Length: 447
Ligand code: GLU
Ligand code: MG
Image (cartoon, rainbow, N blue to C red; front, side, top):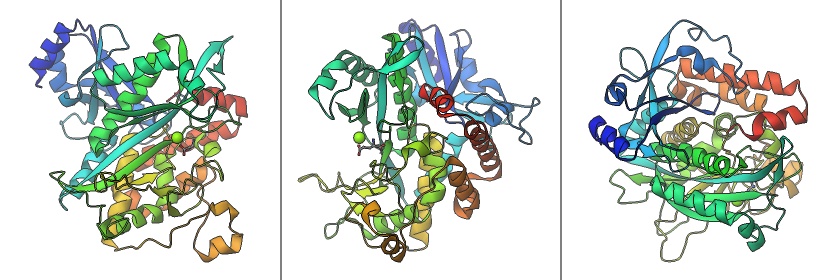
């Protein structure tokens, strides 16, 4: 659709405000909205935003980052393909935006443009990364200014499903109307915990869908007087909310899944790509599980993947190769990354995943032996002998690993890396000086 068609679709739907959305270094989704007056023009020229926003952390504490102070502007310019009327907000629509410099080129800090660069690096090899997100989240009632889980039912229990049935129906309907393909929905293990899986799509499209999904999960809850938390660990003693990412490489015309091999669980290219991801995993965690609260989730024996290993159908491995479905062998061949949560910026997470995987292909890395037990049950010596280590245990460690990783650093580029580290490290400074309750309240409704 071009700008005129979008303006006329917005008028047909009686839209009053069109949100220009972006997800920044802090992983939160922010927006500025325009009325229909001058929408076509704003779609070309964008809306102005201070450069300082990309130095802002998730507590709205502005960090000292060179070139991101009170002086200077960028433009958020929408991608017309992402136009959606929002079923959960009155007379509202939204588009995802790129952050452009005043000359019209991508601002070096633009996370969405980073993912496009990584997609271009794949395109040179005639490949596309397909990704699908599985969001776990917690539904809660608001009671006396705090949150209480909607139910305390068993894992996959139909009693839990009944407790959230009206919400789930509206959520799936809302995503459907936005063209986001929902695959499954169920009540998960933890109190009030839900899971929704959305279909796989080329990386940029999948990341856009992930933002729309997060917005819809929260928007539908709010409209019903509920609260939806995508925080990695909404309650310290309850199961965490993962946002597992399933990925595979396809030929550019999407005709062939290059992860599939008729004679092995994974093709050689899939193994090399995954070996690259495994090799860079501690650093990649700085992008895929980037918040303070992320490290309350990633711990042994919580099925979140705490050790550097991979395995077939092994839910304690951060990289899981799921068994394929009979009759759908090629289409269902993929790898799952478990050390990811919804506090990540999905553009950075997928861009980092591509950079790590491409490095594996370039270096012709091979996967080590798969792990077919819970790695926590191995002895320390056994793990060391097999090169299995603990993934970062804190946000600070993950960010240090990211800063020390030359491949991911180079892929992000200096401006994006520097501002990202400043923002995320400042969150560590704040949260590590506070207590668990401050952390819980600071994360519960942020993502
Ligand atoms: N809730 C677990 C996590 O944090 C995942 C459970 C599952 O395997 O679905 O990642
Ligand atoms: Mg799950």
